[in-house]
Amino acid sequence: MTTSAELIEMSERRSAHNYHPLPVVIHEAHGAWVTDVEGKRYLDCLSGYSSLNFGHGHPKIIEAARNQLDNLTLTSRAFYHDQFAQFCAGLGDLTGKDLILPMNTGAEAVETAIKVARKWGYEVKGVEPGQANIIVMEGNFHGRTTTIVSFSTDPEAHDNFGPYTPGFRLVPYGSTEAIRRAVDPNTVAVLVEPIQGEAGVLVPPDGYLSEIRELCTAQGILMIADEVQSGLGRTGQTFACDYEGVVPDVYVLGKALGGGVVPVSAIAANRDVLGIIQPGQHGSTFGGNPLACAVGIAVIELLNTGEFQARAAKLGEVLHARLRELIGKGVVEVRGRGLWAGVDIDPELATGREVSKALLARSVLAKDTHGSTIRLAPPIVVSEEDLVWAVNQLADALYELDTAL
Image 1 (tube, helix red, strand yellow):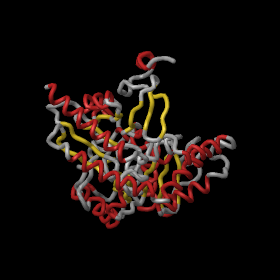
Image 2 (spheres, rainbow, N blue to C red):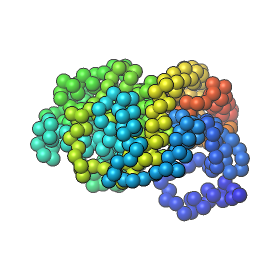
Image 3 (cartoon, rainbow, N blue to C red):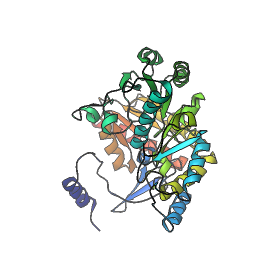
Image 4 (cartoon, one colour):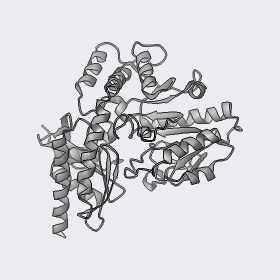
């Protein structure tokens, strides 16, 4: 078997350096644990940025994928297939929406929501052609397409990819007053992450989402909730918006919708919004393919039990309680909901990457963001014992870094 070092060297030599991975080469995975090519096991506390909410190789999801592989994997949307109707109906019921438009990646789903909002603005709201604007938040992360990076405030995602797509108005995250000031007659939507993941798992002030909902309703504009990372059980509710009882006009979904098996994304909206899309105006060769739909159906069935939402809520209390004990011991702040936490490391002690590498040496996989923050998002199937063990590894790593100063 080729060693980790050899595979890393080849990867660095033969691939574009658009990622900066930690030095581990994963060979197989089950549940919350992964194994590298040398046979060392690690607890996965990243979950593919919430793509693996149900763990690696969940039996129900794998069974659905295997059964579908034996029958039909792709037709394109030129024809109907026998998994499509059930997927759309199931996801519509889960979101409480009339219609579903399936795509592949989260970024594609966000692009779809942008297109739908603009078209709705022109054809329903009556905005002058080419004048629609969408209000977006500073610190956002919605993907890396040319349109999306046009309104990113992250220099790494934004800089040197222009010319940039117009039609977006940036406002501070967490301020509904800033949104109110940015609205004009050409505003068609507010696009918001209920919790900003890439920014460091930033939870907005209480009432923020409710106020956005009220503002959008009053102003006759769409509320679009990007629940690609925060949705489908991660926070202890089906959607992060549920914490405030908010129902957006458009849900943007992805990541966990594919069960960690295939890319599956979608937007969900009622007929008065999504009904404006007509044949030929939007689509994807692989969007809503039979394999993706079969996997998505299995994911929806798991969520319909409520088991995963309840488990994420319960284990989230354990996770956050233990992390808060580390404040003042190498940790400055802890944020998040459910099994999702942003942990700010004391920058005088170490960078987020240094702590991530220290955790890697202790058989825990986590990832840094924005310099001094690490994110923890283990699969919802993680055991309480393993979860506490992982936080203990963080505590020990911080102690070792502190004593080494």
